[in-house]
Length: 562
Image (cartoon, rainbow, N blue to C red; front, side):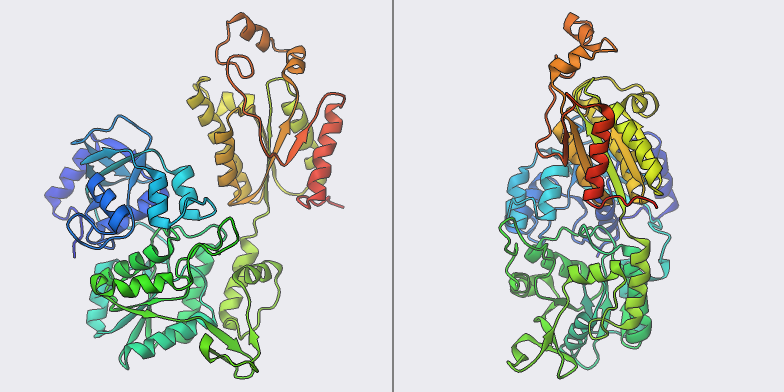
């Protein structure tokens, strides 16, 4: 088992010397989590991001070219075409801090649709792994070995953040020879607790449990990780301390079903576990666009058991368990009798109960755990709202958006931010031109600020031409993680915009003195499904603004202050 760190003083000096001269690559959140587990041995046998041969082998046959089992592509994507094979680059976190050096062995363009089909079994973008792959992944992969410096990646919950080496050494010190690992990205309820205890019994009288929840990237809509970790700590202290160990795993999930189950088992083996629990629909992402589950409920269990000897860890498949009222206990599905009263609460229903502050029954989860989750839900309510006005120059979007902003100030208590395209150009995007790339960046910057406003439960009113659907859709995907996104298309015809040309833009474009002007020499991609489309001909800006306010009230997105 390897750790890929510079450890001697001479090596560390070499690392820091190179940090001053090597080209820097800023890692995304996913890349950062992946790199951390490569460096500390959590992703053994990987020694870096997959090169082209490794990538093709993993995608097609779930093995590295050297024969080791590895089911999940761990890749470094970029849109920069200037990287060269043989170049050494410095990998940095989002704040610019050097993390690792990488020697580039491969620069290649993957077939992302083939990757989606082979790894996830689908190209349906309702699958979160596929959505990220096809919408957010950049077109070039860099592959190569990495080495980094030991560092404290996080400053929260440090007492339960354990590297693979630290966990293995702890188990050895405590004399734990049989360790059953449990994977979760959700709070642990009574059914999960019952599954863990049943698996522990199966593993033998000396078996102990490793409660090993994921705290990297999980699935959109999951309960925030701070609240989840607090709930794990409460569960551990109240119900598991005498037979279990709690540690956090900073892993970016892909929700890849069968392949993910095998991947999770390999990672837990690297952390010192001897057994691994695979539950029903392990790492399943829900339903596809036809309303059916992406994976058979027991496909993950079947694949993990099939590959058990290669994984090198004992797989403990667990069947779904149901609460039977008459027995006041959870029982395996096949033991439920016709006369039994079975009670259940879906994950969606449970999260809704938390948001509304409704009482959750003790048969579903431990009261002390529910108390922690209730407190977290109150703090994590997603009430943010972004109104994004788009349309041609002269369509009236800035005028209408500003009127909406003023009306919202009058009737709302929420903090409200107004982001006008012209002002953003002066303050946030000064220096950007009007190429497609620069326009995309400008809209991305507006989206970034709007998302921060929404994340803190505020309202952002944005007005910009935003001619490209790709940029608008990217902002939508990001912002909808933190609040409600409302696209308002100010649908004023080009001929009318030319008549209103108070700034003389269209005249300059027609004369050829202004290049890349939207609607004249550059395209405007009309929104296909905006939440609201405003026809401005025959209406005053005040009337259009009132239409927007009426829509927001009808959709219960705002509540007028008495």
